[in-house]
Length: 270
Figure 1 (cartoon, rainbow, N blue to C red):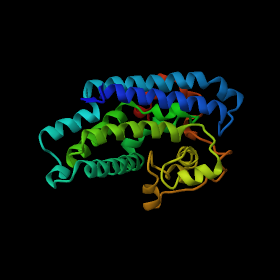
Figure 2: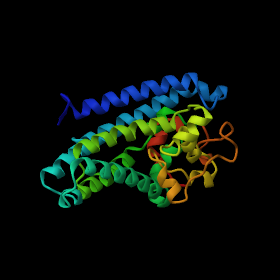
Figure 3: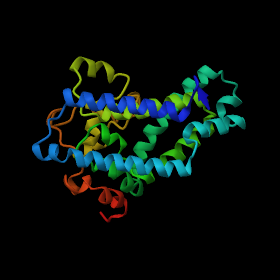
Figure 4: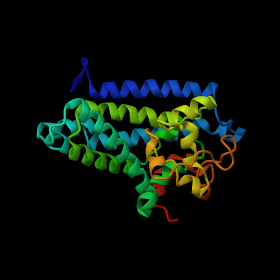
């Protein structure tokens, strides 16, 4: 489908590239965490691994869902599926409802991946990253990406979500995830204001803490309301925003930056 003369994949790719480039540049000038010499030396290898996982996940998704989430929405619309069309909800309102509902669905999915052991085995690939920066937002095992798309597609079909709303949601979700994973220091006042609405880097970094209580908090990727509503919000890490330690203690800081190790982690014992 064309939007303003451009195909949907072009919009998604352009938005991704712009957000990634901008955030990667900002990380250089305004980092929250200054990494020790070892981590700085290994940053290039981390980035190669994380970006390689993204490529593999994208290839799998391309095979399983050639038209992606927007294609699912177009398919459902063409058949009149969904609660929103059945209720005769006007397109603008339907788009807003779908956007908010999809954001909640992703929050709920994230919680479930933490609570169900077999899903946590897959999701821990994301948390094993010893550093947290813009590339961590791309580090999801291909199996998790596939399961996430199946869940998202089910929600889109159930809602009868408008295709344009789904496209906007996908762009915001990707950009938002890169933003709140970025190793970025925001002014304290700006962070405090923004986190009333969206998830900020300091807020989400707590979710990547090695401390279990903190890992089980701040699940949001875009809107911050869900964690506040369901009492999973933690305002500040116990060691402070500059002293937080990220990753998973069980795997150290070297093994998780290896591509093959990361891909087979869900199938390892323990």
